[in-house]
Length: 263
Image (cartoon, rainbow, N blue to C red; front, side, top):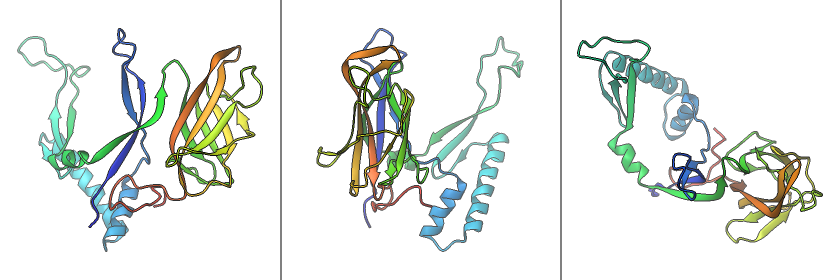
């Protein structure tokens, strides 16, 4: 059996809690898909002989029983999670008078021992993207042909890039600056973009070159844009990675490649 392996790609963003430290950053994990009960059921059906409707029914009942048990005042320890009732908020005096505006029942949720052990196999990988809270960043890349946001791109079709101050311009405000796809494995420029469908401060749309072969890429946007009235003295390079042509690596499991968006 193949060893399970996982990778979490992350961006860096300024740590606003340390005002006196100018070089302090925290990680923001670039999540893939917002999986639902239906998605999990599909995954289980692929690995077992269980009926999809049966799996969904069991998961739904399982969730219901966890909620009921915790609301009854029980702790619940599953294979992945520990649920424990809690009552936040301070009390004045020893009478235990409940103020419903402050003392609202809550549940503490923590990963189980098995979950924490599995987390030890996750490899954090820096995306190369630094998100400046007051500056420019690429927030999301959507494949227009499929609607996927997991990094998958369709050659010959457009991708919709959103963010802040991402308009690509030359030093004099003309043209489209420099936009290119770099092969992550070889670090070689795989394609340079010559035209854009949309080139706005918060949105750029471009056609993915049909010449790109299967592989992992990073998008680099070099621009002098700062705002509509100001240009930078030196160009700023915005990076977004990973982007994929062909199969998107799984975030875990057997190690075989798959497209997380295809369920």
